[in-house]
Image (cartoon, rainbow, N blue to C red; front, side, top):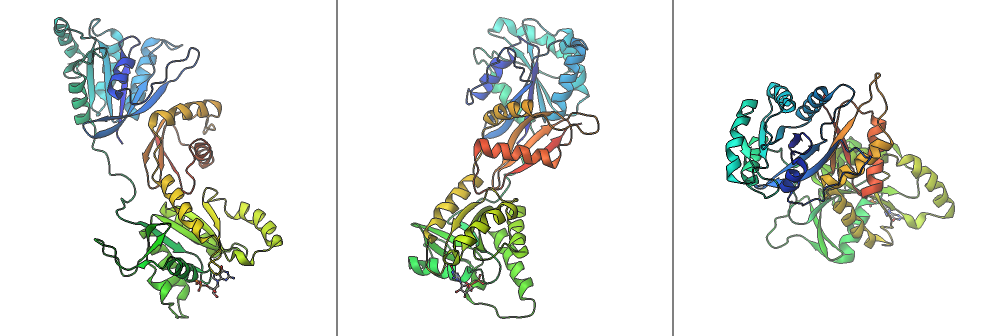
Length: 432
Ligand code: GDP
């Protein structure tokens, strides 16, 4: 999702214009006295295009003086954004502040748009011509207050933004795709048979869809699900040589083809290396995940106690996974699988609006700033959720963020917004 930074002196009507562009789709955080929100980011839409709009703070003189503060802010906007919108008060014209900014912006190879605001009636149109002197191209006359011509301005903005890359992840059509994975003898075939048999609804063809012969359509909870790459489960391959290699290859193929994985674990035994390898595959592929502790019929009180500690340590990579205790043998609780799959997929598809995300993030980062590295304090400028399937956050920063701090952000993000059953990726875009 491309980023547009809006810059301008205080009182040029920048906030009003930002509101106008957002169509008040997201509540704009009002400035609270004593609280400096340097930048606030929002989702904006125009002509079917999505972009992130970053509202940079007003320029106030600091210790280094107004000109330096302004230049630094323009520099920052230029580095973080894909395009910059400079808002000027047409009734005042270009001041030395704007001339300084224009000088910085002209050096940039990024598109710069110039909005001449407060052109509330036609008599003021003539004033905008003087703004050509900034060397930023054509001034776009607008009246943020009355909405005048903001459509034309947005057309120009959208035309200037780079085309967004395609959504991360695959788009699904028809039944959602499930991988049933786990080490040999954990009970995959038994579970598939149970699910198919119990529902008496192994559908081999659904009207209008062709089923890959290696997939099975299974109805769970009144809904068809596509269990991918299950051929190997039905006809057990009895090859001693390389059996494990093929098993792990099958696991990888199934996970890649799926949207959500049911990772079957043997509840009666300690977690094994093999279990962890499968979990790693799911996390790395970015798939939603349901952990099913199978053979629950064999679990007694002692084992249950032992498990609690074992899992705390063993499942550190997937504390967010949905968990169900089942028995493929007796059929106990297998009906809990469908709700768990739905929860996990809902999270996998979920998107947090940029305004909401940044309201939360600015408080978090203010309370716990990233650790200093090489004598420098990296600043987190803003974030957007760049994608779903899996949900992917992009943090825009002035420096590298350590893995520990990224995990901290992820943990806090989950505390705030949930996302049970889905991995969440946290990427960092450093602007030097
Ligand atoms: P797969 O290799 O993962 O497909 O495992 P299978 O489905 O072939 O099961 C391996 C063995 O575990 C078989 O002997 C099953 O009967 C047994 N099994 C599977 N699920 C359960 C369960 O829930 N409880 C118990 N006690 N045994 C199970």
